[in-house]
Amino acid sequence: MKANLAPWLAALVGALALGTARADITVGVSLPLTGPASGLGIPTRNGIAMWPDSVGGEKLKLIVLDDASDTTQSVKNGRRFVAEDKVDVIVGSTATPASVALSAVALEGQTVQISTSPVDLPDGKDAWTFRVAQSTPLMASALVEHMKKNGVKTYAFLGYADAYGETWLKAFDAQAAKAGLKSLATERFARADTSVSAQAIKVTMVHPDAILIGASGSGAAMPHKALIERGYKGRIYQTHGAASRDLMRLGGKDVDGAFVVAGLAVMPEALPASHPSKKLATEFVTRYEQQFGAGSRNQFSAHGYDAYLLLQAAVPVALKKARPGTPEFRAALKDALETTSGVTITQGVIRYTAKDHWGLEDSARVLLTIDKGDWRLAN
Image 1 (cartoon, one colour):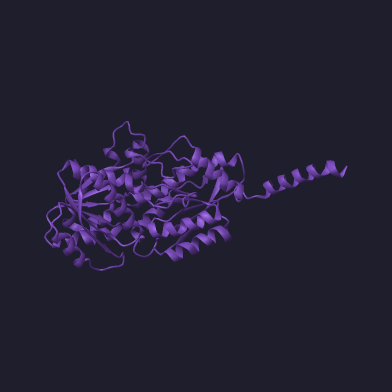
Image 2 (cartoon, one colour):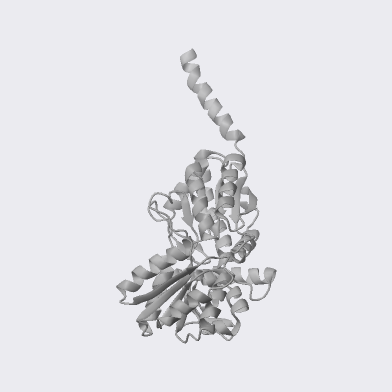
């Protein structure tokens, strides 16, 4: 009789354990709400604030922490999420260095991380990290194509001396070399620097046809202005980290004529009617500006909102295998993201696989220029 009873007891214990697992989907959000990258983190938080209060029929519980644009604090936040809060998923960070640090915690804790920055990780280190932001090579190729078509033959790079700047330098140099463009100078600066005059002098002295600024948020305006002050007359390009009104607000007339690669939510009106994200991105921008003010749209808020759209698609699939608050659910959520046939977000259509945790394609970007303090499509 004992032999017959043992399986029955095991099944009962399993059922009770499943029943006691909480129903709430707990999301740990770690963003740069203060510090140099706060211009990116605050709108990301605003996008997350627009989430519904449930997903897949389960209540959402959000725990939002400030990483202060700091990698050490990002790790502390991540460890709290995993060890104390037992979150089902981590969202963040919008500061690339902080997101790199967070990814190590996600990997160790086997918890899905939806990165709101284009974090570049070695093979295998991104097993639990899914990016909702466009990859750097994807965005870099748009700039290289534009340079090539407009007769640019030489360029210089002026960018952050951190993971964001280095990722852009690596991706851009590789694609530029294939296109026959020649690099004449590379200069770096720290996010907290208050002047880049020395670096600006060095890159302008070699007279490149174009200069790429590898910076983000408000930090992208200072090097741009420094180049103009040095009398530079060539083309100036900015990365998708600079695709916000902060660039225009701080750069003023000096940034007119800049070329900026951006996500779709910056100017969804320019998308063709057939684009799968046209309706979704336009509706999001309308809602966002109603809540946060005219002209406040930006791609960082869209990344925050898009994280919900990923969960909306993956959570119902994961719930068929396990309940929230368990390792089994976290694993099921990862599997659901990797096997989706495609999720339409405001920035394009994401198709993750087990080997590709980027998912976005060429249709997830636009090339803009600044004209009299406003965006317009580049040629």
